[in-house]
Every structure is written in C-alpha cells, then in structure tokens.
Image (cartoon, rainbow, N blue to C red; front, side):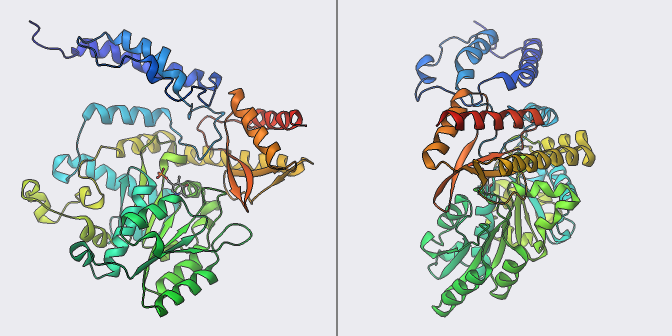
Length: 476
Ligand SMILES: *Cc1c(COP(=O)(O)O)cnc(C)c1O
C-alpha cells in the first residue's frame, strides 16, 4: 500500500518547470492562435471522460489533454489581436505574483491570518492612489482606504450596500425595512449597477435611469429632476452612480456636476471607472477624474488595463467605517487580540465573502517590475493606437466614428447598414485573425475595438483594420 499520493517536492519541481515553460511558450505563440474559439457548445466536454479517474494520472497525461482538448476551447484574451469587450490584460510579473500567491495558499480574511497579506494590500492600494492621482481621501492613512475585490460588480455592490445602510442610519441590516430608497445611474451604465441595486434590496423599480447627451454621458439636469421628483414623492435618494468610461462607448459622465447634485441630496456618490481609471496613470489623463473629490467610493479594475490578471478590482471609500459597519459580523471563532485592539485592518469586513486570496502580490510585482515609467509607456501606447485607428476610420469614405474616443475604445460603423456591419464582424471573427465585438448606440449596431492587450502593437491594429476593410468589400 502506498504511503502517500502527493507529488513529491522533486516531482513538483519538474512539473513546475514544465508548466512555466508551457506558459512562456504560450505567450510567445499566442498571436498565432485563432483568437476566438470556434468550438460548438458541448464540444469540449464531449471529448473528456464523464467520470473521474480511479487511479491518479501522470502530469504528462494531464498536459497532453490540456493541449489536445482544452486549448481548442480557449478564446485567447492574451492575444495582441484581441480587441473585444474590454481587455483583461495580464503580464509576466502578474502571472508570477499569482503563482507565488497560489504557492503560499494563504487565507487573508483577518490581519492575524497573514499579516503580510493585509499590510501589502493596504500598501499597494495606497500606491495606486498615487499612481492614478486619486484624491487623498481614499488613502488608508486617513479615514478612507482601498480593498481588493474580485470584480467591479462586487465593488459596486459593496458600495451600494454601504450607501443603503448610511441612508437608513445603519438600521436596514437589522430591520430589512426598505421600499423608500432610490438609486440613480445613466442609461449607459454597466449592468452590474442594476444588479447591485437589486441585490441590495433597493429594487430595480427604484433605480432612476438618467438620460444621456449626444456623447452618451449622463445629463446632470435630468438626474436632478428625477431626484427632486422622488423626494417630493417621499423617497430617499440613497446612491448615485456615475461612470467614467462606459462599457458601450467609454462615455465620461460629468463627475463634478453629478457629485454636487448627489451631495445636495445627501446621497452616496459612487464612481465606476472600471476600465478608464487606469488611463489616469498618465498625468495628462487626470481630467477624467475631475470632481472625484466629491465621491464616497470609486472602483477601478487593474485587471482590465493595468497588466494585472483577473481577478483584481480596487474599491476605494472615503469613510471606511461606513463599509465596516455595513459588512462586519464577528462570530466567536474569529475573535483575536489584534482585531480587538482596533489597530489592524480585517479585510473580511470590507467584502461579501469571508475567505480571501493574497491578490496584492500581483499588483506589487507589476508595479515594481514596470515602475511608473513602464506603466505610463504602455498605457500611452494603447491610447495612441486608439487615436490612430480613430483617424483611419474618420478618413475612410465608407466608415464613420460612432462616438468620441476619450480613451482606448473605438466605436464605428460602416455606412452600408446593419447587415454590412454584421457581415464585417462575423467575417473577421471567423477568420480567427482578430476578435472584436459590438454594441448598440442609438439603436444601431455599432462595431467596437478596445485596444488594451498587453502585447498589442501598431501592426496588430493595422492588420485588424485591413481585415475589416476587406470584409466590408466582400459584403458588396
Ligand atoms: C467591465 C466593467 C464593469 C464590470 O467589471 P467586472 O470586474 O467584470 O465586474 C463594470 N463597469 C464598467 C464601466 C466596466 O467597464
């Protein structure tokens, strides 16, 4: 009888070298893979055994199936030819930070369960305030602070919960008594806002959808009107959510004016800059944040555009006690001296879940590897490539820009109508040479290319544009 089924340290060492070599080769070759996986639903599962193996298998056998069966079902987010949705960009230092985090396998729910996990998280989030030029009120050294969440959706949910609690004098956690609270966001906001409002118990029927202007940015006058109507009807505005860089078209809501209105009504002001926030690593992009001093909370996703692989969403608040009063529950079995002393942060009180991974390592590795200079260089490159693509669209007689290009997303349409645009998208995506997605603006099918993959260069953007023009020609 075997004493152990574990990998020995030496087996792990050998398999580990193989795995690193595999990832290194993948990143070298990824631009040659068809970007969008072409498998049919169920196609991957059908090729895998229906039941778990009775006896353990070799690492080699597992890797063989990874190559043969799993890889065809991968859409290559790390391909420089990936222009779909918003990028989820990774980088070598981030991958290594993730690996070491997995190696440590810590559970950082409390300061006491791994002091370094908590303290490094606090530090890198304070660094990020400086890197992005965010208001000092978000620093942990005052009354505010940042916390890593898995996604912007969780960040916005947690902020909405704190807003709900503050609006009711921190009573609804106990009483569950709702029905008079309202929330506001623009018609162009991310779907995670409605989801948060639903989960927080405010209810999507109490979510005021504010009209947008010709550039798809929130109209503050309409926000004010909706809030006044609700107040007159006996409702309490709990939260206003503005977007810096909407998902459809990267429209920039006027944060300053929206913040002033939210303040006037005593509503929590949350700013969702999940993608575009990373652009402010460049001082000349900090106009995006004008008025952010008025925000109670703010979310940016380094896992979209700051070379840090999923998951890493940074949520900031100016008053951490509002968040902690909303989310803290302390059962006997988690009581400990450090917590009782009040001298430490227990991040479990800043999120929905209890357990948490050591994600700070990723951003720490990234920032130390690239330095401010490196981060600026690569983000500036994406911005430049987006502007140049926008110029190409503008100069082409058959294409129009469909929205302004404040950051790294280009929205455009062929003049031939819906069918031609659909044909262009389907043709290019089926070719596997590039992958982009669509949205609807003013009810019209709109093609969109996000330029933010870590290794995207001019030649990739130029090639994608050539494919688009060729596909348009083949539609006629
Ligand atoms: C991508 C995005 C989200 C959702 O991000 P997740 O981290 O996937 O939840 C929310 N808001 C905006 C503006 C986004 O671009």
